[in-house]
Amino acid sequence: MTAPRKPSFPACVGTHSPLAPAAKPAVASAPPQPRGVGLDSVAVRASMVRRLAQAGISHPQVLDAMGSVPRHLFVDTALVTQAYEDTSLPIGWGQTISRPTVVARMVQLLLEAPCVQAGGRLARVLEIGTGCGYQAAVLARVASEVYSMERLRAMHERARDRLRPLRLANVHLILGDGMLGYEAGAPYAAIIAAAGGTQLPSAWREQLAVGGRLVAPVAGAQGQQVLQVVDRTEQGYTQRVLESVHFVPLKSGVA
Ligand code: SAH
Image (cartoon, rainbow, N blue to C red; front, side):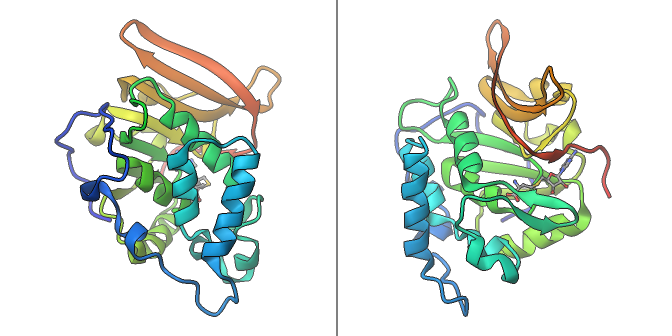
């Protein structure tokens, strides 16, 4: 993990070498082992990955990322035994970490963006809602750079502490209002939000690269929350609505 800095490479570039050594984060070579929880997390993660595949997640890089990030390190000790179940879990301050199937589904949607070549990685990604930092760690496995924003200072600081042992040099944590996006890192090949509002903030569309994709929960026609996908093309934007989802509210300002 490093301090945010202005990136120096194009936003929308995939490579055909998904596990190129230069981009491979430290977590892959030295996965931390669980201590004192009686779990063999490698085996437990493998069985979670099998369940994800049964649930329709097919992208090899998504399955690889989900199989390598130690989810139990991001939840409170009391919840560790549930870390690999397909359930959302409380992460403090009234917020929740999404179910693994939802994380995997959204990351898979990003990897299917028009600007990602077959078998490629994502370039720069903006995540709104760092939360416990788990999804940022997953994104770090499939993207060159991850900019992750959190509006709650205490949450942001705890995510920093939890991500530190994973030594993910391509993850940049930003304390700030994600409704404004993060102009310094724009344009992004992908933007993913873990909190939903009544509409998509205009900054997200503006900061998306041409060929890039935005995946976010937003209020649907009947007031229920739905997953929305917005693609930026040379001609403008196309958008489609997918399934109903349940994310915490997108709020403005830093607290
Ligand atoms: N991806 C996260 C899920 C976190 S829950 C994980 O893996 O744990 C959603 C988070 O979005 C909460 O921490 C909430 O504080 C944050 N959030 C809500 N509105 C926000 C905003 N405008 N900017 C940044 N973060 C926001």
